[in-house]
Every structure is written in structure tokens, then in C-alpha cells.
Image (cartoon, rainbow, N blue to C red; front, top):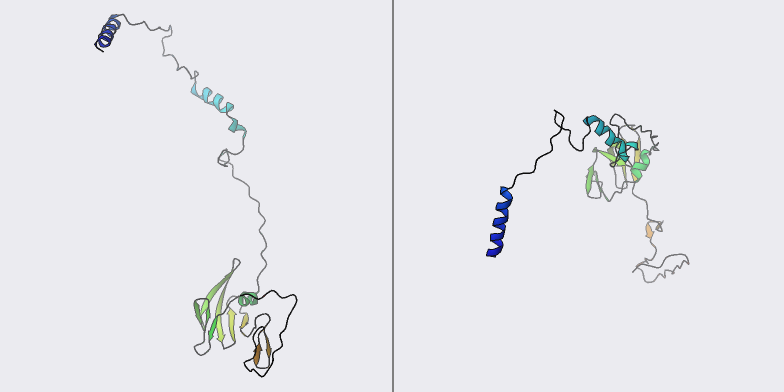
Length: 195
């Protein structure tokens, strides 16, 4: 290790004592241009722009137009949305409960009262509605824009349920009287009963 250090010390001393190499001197009086630039910077930039592949494209890598002055021409035909009738708006209201004594009804978790005004939004269409009347079997609404009235009746029975006089006849439910024999009705195209 000592020998290596002494050798490096002697070599560095010999190199420091030698004359430096002369630099080439140009004959021109001004400063020489940089190695990669032409005489004028604008010519060099224009030449590089011509070689880029993006100059022939209308849009850049991010989908934007290369010419900042250009604005896209958008020609979209507006879709004509068919108007929904007021009755269809009201028909789709799912009333869960009616309190005819307090003149209020329940839709989902919201409570509505007689005279209350609220908006209904359906498929982007919005109308303002006021509750006009509340009874045990129906609710009457008024469209505030057109003045039209619509009634939502609640005596609609589910599919398959029929009334026979005052009693409801529901498929699969028999009478409480054991003396009456309810016939078993079997339909060949009906789905199997759910557990």
C-alpha cells in the first residue's frame, strides 16, 4: 500500500511539471458559434420542427388541436325528448301509507301533507306539484305549471288478486271456516311456489 501511494505521488508530480497542451486558436476575430447551433437560432428551430412527425397531425398526443386558434365545430342534433304526461308522473308515485284523518301520506320515508308543494323529477323532466286532496283511497295532485289535476287511487289490487263482494280472494289463501271446502286450483303455466 505504501508503494502504491509513493508511485502515485511521483507520477502526479511529474505530470504537474509538464507544459500544458496549447489550445487551437481560430483566425476569426469573433466568438465561434456553438457546435450544435447554426448561425441563426431561428433557422435551427425551423429545421427541427420540420423533422418532427407531429407537425403533420391535426391533433397532439393529448387530443388537443395543434393550432391553438382552431376551435372544433360541434354539430349535434338535439334529441327530442317526448313529453311525459302529468298522469304518468303521478302514476309512478309509490304511496306506502295514507293517514286520511291528518290529511297526509307516506312515500318511502317522506311524509307529504295536504297543500304541500314539491318538485317531481322523472327522466330529466321536472314539474312542481301541490297536494290538493287526501282521502282514504286516493290522493289528488295539481300541476302548478299547467293547472292540470291527477288522481292517484290506492284501491288497485296486485296481479292475481280479485274481489268477490266484500272479501278478497287471494291465490293460495283459504277461508277460516272448516266447513267450506275450498277447491285447489292448479294452473299448468304457473311458476312453482317460492319457499
